[in-house]
Structures are given as C-alpha cells and as structure tokens.
Length: 290
Image (cartoon, rainbow, N blue to C red; front, side, top):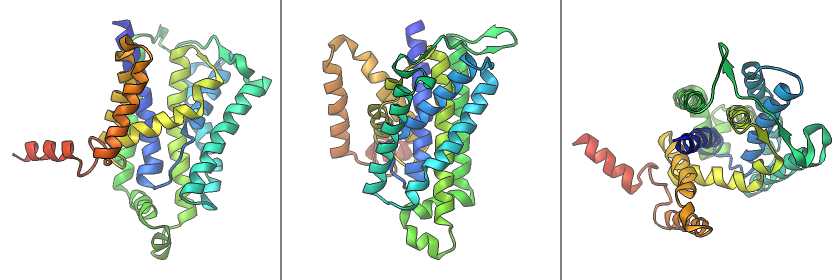
C-alpha cells in the first residue's frame, strides 16, 4: 500500500508540473524544454530554507513559489527576443545552466545535494504517507482551479491570442512582452510549489533529479494527454508517471515500451488521448450527449 501511495503522490506532483507547463505552452504557445529547472529551483529553495535556515515547511513552501515565480519571470526575458525553435534552444540552455549551478556551486550542496529535509507538520502532526498524498492532491486541485480560472479571464484570452499569432495579438492591443513574462512567472511559480513538495516528500534533493530528461518527460505528459486542455496534462501525467513503475517486471524493456507508446501517439493521435478532436475525447463527448 505504501508503494502505491508513493506512486500516487509522485503522479500528483508531476500532474502539477504538466499543468504548469500547459499554461506556458498550451495557453501562451511558448514551447519550453527547460521546465525541470523551475521544478529544481523550487525544490532547492524549500530545502535550503528548511535545512540551512531552520524554517518550517509552510513558509518555505510559499517562499519557494514566490522565488521561483520571480526567477521564472526573469528567465522568461529571452522569450521576448526569440521565437519557436530558438526559444526551445534557449529554455534547454537554461535547464543545463541551472543544473550546473546546483552541481558545481558548493553553496547549493554541489553533487552531494541536500539531505535531511523533514516532512511537513500540521498542528504537531507529521504529514506522511496518505496525509502527504492528500497535501499533494490538494495542491493539484488548486493548480487545476488556477488553470481553469485563468482560461476564463481576459488574460487567458490574451494568452490564446499570443499563441495563435503574436503580431495579430499586438495589433489588437495585447502587450505581448508583458503576457509572455506573466506566462513564464505563473508557470514557474506553480512548478516551484511542486518542487517544494517533491523535496519534502523525498527527504533529499540532488542536481540530477532536475536534469534535461525530466523536462522532456514533463513535455511528453502534456502532449500525450492533450495540450491546451485541463484534462490532458493530468491524465498524461498519471499514465506516464505510473506506467514505468507498473512495468518494472519487464526490466529495462519498460523504457522501450514507454517510448513506443509515445511514438504511436505522435503518429496516430497527435492531439493527445484527450485533446480536442481526439478520437477518445470525441467518443466520450458523444456518450455524454447521448
């Protein structure tokens, strides 16, 4: 049971990451392959504030969100100068730079990382096992609400216009630079909260936990589930985070199966399994309407 709870907790955390990236890529059209950097910044911020500064989890959790949001807005500045393929390369570079800082700067623990990170406590009760899962699920629900609320606001319409055509959006009065920074900041802040939860659940953080391969994994979850939707990233995260664990009995072949599933999706269902106009989503809608 403990193993299943751990998988579910990790799935909730990665669902938050997928939703946060969906705001940046699905809503605003800014393709990023460096999202794990924001995940790592939030994890390290929370770890250092609790282990080295002696803070409790709750203020460290809020601080990690705020710090990552500010850093995300700052690191979003390259998006004002580059587009499309060049933005992908820029965000990849950011991921490698952030991990190099964590690994080679002794202030952040270097390659040895940070250990001894305590579980959060509430009214003297340590949150572990199903209680920590409940905390992660609550943060996932909050992220879903923020994503849904944002999509219904004028800012959400501005991000959609930005995704479809930046020049046309600017022509109708949308401040392209401002909304790009907003998208990066909000996306990074939510990812930072996920990083804080990850650090305190695992009890330690190491630079390799936030490497470029994790950014690829987060993007795969968004694309697999259905980019630009609320349901897609969540379903994609739960399937792709849990699938490799349930396939452990086949050894290293599980990664081949994992990759094969992604390739088949890209070939036959590029909208994702639950994306708009996907075969499965259309079938579900028809069933609901009937």
